[in-house]
Length: 352
Image (cartoon, rainbow, N blue to C red):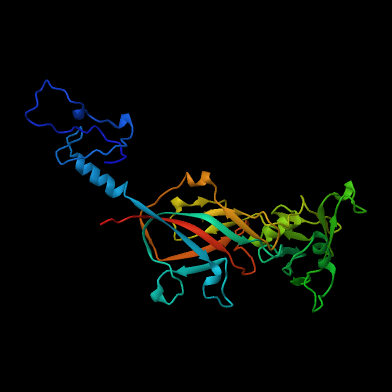
């Protein structure tokens, strides 16, 4: 029993020992005295305080609680897998079984009890307006309508200008598409403290002013995840907003065109080894995005995180499903660009 705490083990003595003789080797060892870092050989004759065999306890403990482990590191590169037009680098599965026709060279990992991310390389979205935040739902009169922004990299002034620009030319990259009966159009103005007309009356500041051609138009910023993403972009809270008598409404706060983080989900990993995010998803880790649009974010877990790890009952890993989520719980839209992850896989070791 090396490096383990013993529970009052009575070492056996020979029958010839006098009842008055004392021997320090015959002491009852208690877990209260800490961990025994020196090797202590347990025999079939040694018993615990309840007279069960110490050897049986040791075998049980080693089998279920303190089995030796081995750690391997698994590197996942999305660009190494067969890709076609339907491949989505934010939602794909790696099959470890070569007989199934995959091109991966991974082993099937058995008796896995621990799994965590050690480092990652993820590209920040090339477009700050993308499929996670580019649709606004609104009601014009009694008609349900939408306006969809073409994905792209926008400034706040470019974003405001496209709503009333008319039908896009074939060369335009920045434009919107309206849909719905009698949808009307929006005139959107970006207001800053230096823009003429930005007064206290119209809520001056770094905000957007929405002006619809209809009166009493209702904008539903809370329809779904995408509309909530659009609300963040334009500085609105995710709620229903009705324009005033002249068809005008203003954003509630400063617009935010940035992407904050990416949540990494691997469904094969038990929840006890994961973090729970506000959407109720079990995530392996959260990668903060602190670089500009289109640049790669390099992320390394801290030493502090390595001190805390939950283990789980042994499982077999024959595949990994990689899922990346944006902050509004939509699949992360990075234009299908590639990424790389390094995972630590801890397994029980079989010496026999």
